[in-house]
Image (cartoon, rainbow, N blue to C red; front, top):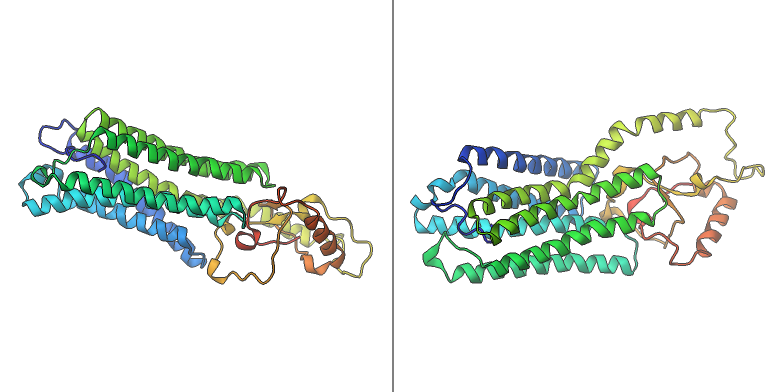
Length: 363
């Protein structure tokens, strides 16, 4: 793919073709299944947004690259007409680049949708735009370099400088995808287990980096057979990673939240529970747990199309614990205390998470 112009020349040393197909089939199949599940889940819950759009573009790109690889086996490529060779070569190189950066853009947009209106959110949006610029720059570079070598098609070898540039852009993109969520989640008031879970999910972006380094290495040392193999693996890994947040949070909600729901139902049926009548003066002071904003893991992606900002609202804390049955509006005194606490909190201390967009907030 990138710089993979000669990866399938007859003289290239590579594993048996059946072994290559088996390895790549596993990588691409996982990417397909996770993306299909992600889009189905988001569509079912009506939470489709731009991160899902980029995931869909990455899916189409991955499918194109894989189908082209299977439909026109590389061992038979040189026996095909020149037009087919050109289509195979340029289609693979350009669509591979599109799929890789679309997967990164999907993760980056997911980060944007979790951030409240702030400077950090503006920076996150700018990074998404930067990813698009990276994709365009790399694609144009490959078009110009390979476009002047039509007589060499499909053996279009990109120079080592291209590998260095591509690796640099990969590292910049992956470091943002790794570090920005950790910074974001570290500022949130979350139960430790949930913070660790989300950090672990976003930290999986490091696997894209490993694949990028391996791919660039084989370009630099001129082992063409493995350039193509690692490019396929890199694309499959990137598409899979961009779907992990939806996949893992859904699995968590199904298998790990049942106990919490049972506990909540038991507490609600407890006859000794304090009254929720706003006129009752003996209401106990709410605990810090009940003052936090509440979110379920599956609510991380909000339905932006249905979100209405009728009034600005900022919550003091955020957590993934289950809500109680006591709405904030049911207790004017508590609402007043919470409002005072929020207004007295400096903007620096407020969480960057947009609770209006991403959370169901109860007190």
